[in-house]
Image (cartoon, rainbow, N blue to C red; front, side, top):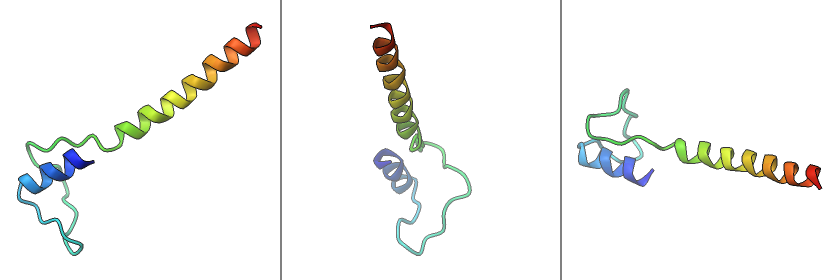
Length: 58
């Protein structure tokens, strides 16, 4: 998120509470905000699968 906000600031978008949200991501802005959460959920699911497999094989 920090990288994305820095990119918005570098692109010249206003960063105050009254600013409107952009309709599209400007060129040069890396927008990967939601991928970290998706990776975390995937790790949680894989952890459950691995521990269940170990538990069931004993």
